Length: 390
Ligand code: BGC
Image (cartoon, rainbow, N blue to C red):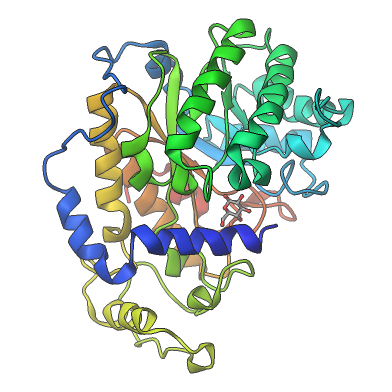
């Protein structure tokens, strides 16, 4: 699963954001914001909507990755880890869930009591520790392969989740679908989202709902999003730039991202020698050349890789009157400790200055914040996320 999905992620990233053009595109995005969504997406002028009020609870979050979405019972999480999240300074937890793996046959797609009891454990422990919580449907491949066919199951799953949690506090939000991609384009998802929102509203009229555009929740797809005139919707976007740094050597990415030893921010003190056994493509060699030579301010392994995107999210959010949440960003533990801390610090500060809530990937898996063995954050990570000054 993991191996297939992120390889596609890499492809789709390259399709709309070729690394050798990133500077030109970043410059473009620094110009004044021009609204480009279909006219059916009506701006909401008030920033006092229920969505903006809810977004205040979703500012500094952590993803419980590799837990309930993993396709097996993944990592174990103890109740006291939710207290640790709160103590560390997080205000919310996003819980990715593979509900579809525990659904019965069509036409009812009945969810097993077991998945509900596992999700209840996470949700109630989060809420009991004054953490807001966002639950979603994660890695629902059938939707990405054939959205039209998968809609019936998607709706049935949401009907059941909505009924189960209808009396839960407002601090529980539902995110409809993680990273739609491939055939689940934004254009195809727009009406499916509208239908799902209408369905959920029958039992949860006040619930905050979270919607991601296609292209793996990519900021480049926001311009195609159309939302119903519902004022309790948050838009969520994912960003793993600079990908050569954040995914270096990850087992689920292609050869282009297997080069390790990349620091953040570049340039490195000793130039990185490309690993020629990986047969690096020209654009990878170009990237490494820029990484080795450009000053930190312009270096592709630096804030320039995401700054313009985050500014665009801010401008889009302001114009359309929809709070935007940066639902996933992070760097794998293959990167050195100091670089990871530099990266998380720079990224979350950029989000904060653009008024975007953020949620790191992840709590205790491959991009971990928490060292489960020592019951402590990974070195440098607490300050990276929560220190006031850099
Ligand atoms: C996926 C994870 C992956 C992470 C970073 C998430 O969206 O669900 O499986 O580890 O992205 O690539």
